[in-house]
Length: 161
Length: 448
Figure 1 (cartoon, each protein chain N blue to C red):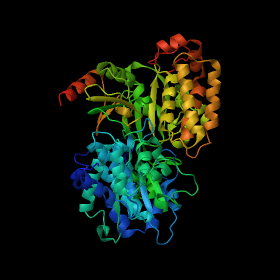
Figure 2 (figure 1 turned 180 degrees about the vertical axis):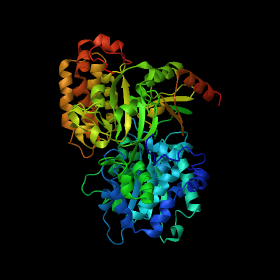
Figure 3 (figure 1 turned 90 degrees about the vertical axis):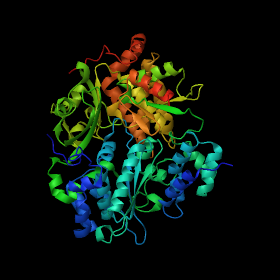
Figure 4 (figure 1 turned 30 degrees about the vertical axis):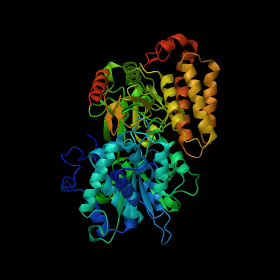
């Protein structure tokens, strides 16, 4: 049986309190963000079932939401997920070259994780950083104005963590 | 320099804190509205201002507010749309990151005008650090008596929360946003009923863009008529333009509506002209959904008049020769860029983001993506171009929400204005493939 840490439970309680009584389902997306973080970046079925239990909704109501939104991962991911924007404004200033470089450097394709479990590459659609392109999202942060050198530095920095 | 309303104090050190924000005159509109105006008077000022929705549709904000149903004993909600996902658009993020209190101030007076006692800011999940900035500012506002019970002793109560999305372009559509806020998939609702009658939790709801709400404090402080005097014609006030692509100075600029497009694109105060000494090929002036225009039609209308950054001027000529101001997501393409590749890229985006409810959009976007990929990768046939035209025409207008139109327009405009380039891809598959990163094509001359 899955159980969440006290800190996560506290956060869940705060999220539920923001919505009117009986509308606790509104807290689903905020809660999924919190539990995904605790569960190493992805949502397993037992984790989603636990959320359904807390919110008093059917498990399918959690699955259908988790599978709809791209920020939720339904499979295990690496310790560092490099989410590179590939949409038009990033593409025309070199995003494809950044993606190709990461693929070569890490020896993985889009959506794959390195064997050591350190990195996952995920290409994503527009993240709202078009003027600071090319860019990638790393956890809660954006890395902008990317160059091949900056990507190399970032990978080294993450390996050292 | 153009008049600044939203970003006037954006670069003041510490403006993200309540103390500095208030020192610069922040929250004056709250005490003015709550202490000396009725909610209807606030709505009236916004109506007089001519402010139009800054999310893309350009619908008059005051009029939208006046449609709100007010049944007795039923709560009403104001939702701020901070889902900002239209490719090319990153302006709302700028307001929230730099001057979060401006949005909160706007939320208070707008909620007051609508009689809402609980309001939400729905922010895209990827803007995690922006959410933190907002929550910090909201906590300060609560501590300062600007949120919560009996705001500034006026008797008016308001609770304000930030709610994250989780990566779905469609949640920028107002009924999808409402569904998402209810903890569901972001499937747009059939209209009617409109949100103004049945929105969040089936209660009357208004959904406004960040930039629209952020404009309301100035309007209350200075009056709707003063705001209406800024800008040109029915394009009143200022607009944030987020400029990106092959320009020298990408970024967010506040312009007075009516600024000549030439000045915006080439002026040193704005984009600063083309990067790397390249020539201008095309511009998408209002986010990826609006029609792309070749350089000559972007700079001058078909009638030969200089184009202006305004709702009317950018749409002059309709879709035959014009475009739209949209969200202000200004994407500039230089002579090296491949229109076919760009159109394929956008179609992939819309296919990825289609919620899947309506067949024309769910199937059509994927079909267009495949056909465009076929042409771009050197396997196109000339009948494919007509096929694309046919598919986009059958999507437009045949879906519950505007995502279908948004997916159709970029394809239609690309073929309308750059048909020769599509034909070149078909005729020269090898050359077009070698230039896959987008190199100068032979058939379309860059003009400027």
